[in-house]
Image 1 (cartoon, rainbow, N blue to C red):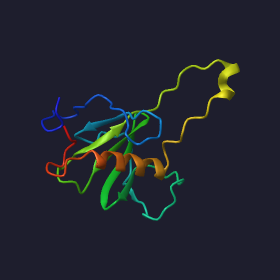
Image 2 (tube, helix red, strand yellow):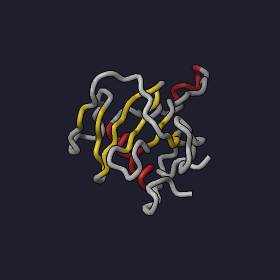
Image 3 (cartoon, rainbow, N blue to C red):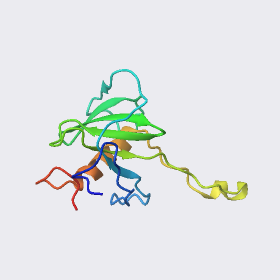
Length: 140
């Protein structure tokens, strides 16, 4: 399904990240924000440190682009507020962990936090780097 002609709540399958972090991306395109959050989003100061863990929902501006970030089912929805296509944005699913035997648990690195401003900024930059400037949608 193309992101140019989606049905409401339509999603593309997750794609691998080009961020170079070594972790797969669970981002998916979506057309509407469906969130279980309550209360108005809080505007985040662009100078706030990357290790800040803000309560959601928030409004975050990255490289001049503004996104409202909400939480849904353990993942995050990013609505591109000032993008060229109303309601366009992306979602990240909740991270899943594999069962690890107790004797192996200390040999693995703990998962990276996905609720920091640094993570949100990186996810937004990954998304924006894949946008076709002529259409405002993900490149084909």
